[in-house]
Length: 103
Length: 103
Length: 103
Image (cartoon, rainbow over all chains, first blue to last red; front, top):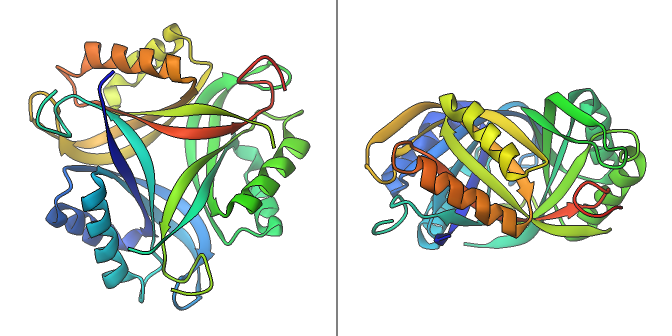
């Protein structure tokens, strides 16, 4: 089994931010993503306001450098005004030519 | 990129347990969660009975101590009678004031 | 808290592959799985063709040996012709008799 160590970057955000976040991900260089609707409830980071309702979970598999670039972009653009959560989990991705120079 | 190491605690359960589990999470001190519908099939832990159908996946980002407290609570209250799965994955959460003393 | 270290194996695939993939998982020995609909966009591995649309995310908790067996099976059977992504994340699963010899 040949795998490559990447990061699964997960974004939880209000669903109205989906198209902006997806556009950001593409511009920053991700090669794929998935989006799922979730319901949620939580406390909004910098302002402490509450949110509850429809959210999206956007996931993308990226190398650690790109993960950092995306995280910093989202923090700078969204954290002050929106309830956005970003986290990284380690992922061993099975190689098939998609995430590297070839299979 | 400033991150804090937390645990992503995931609960897979029959969907009728959702409101009870969410109430438990709040009482135990979580500050946010997401819920998504999933379909599933599996073997029920202690009794070995089968389940199949609509389930919920509840996710929450918590520190390791709270993760342990939630896990023990769920094991004690649900494992004997319900098909509930709980697992923890490591998560590096981007800081924005939500999971700590400030940004 | 008694846990066992397993792998969360995630498959992202075109939704028409769901029943085949689930059958494969069962034949290979998994004891449970969940399926969720996701939307997605990406580049197809070996052929480089693009995919976009409805996908499924199939998740199963398995020991590392079975994870490897599933991954190799999917790579051999699907990677050349379909847009399928497989990745593994570490998961500490709360014990309740389901993933081992007993609680």
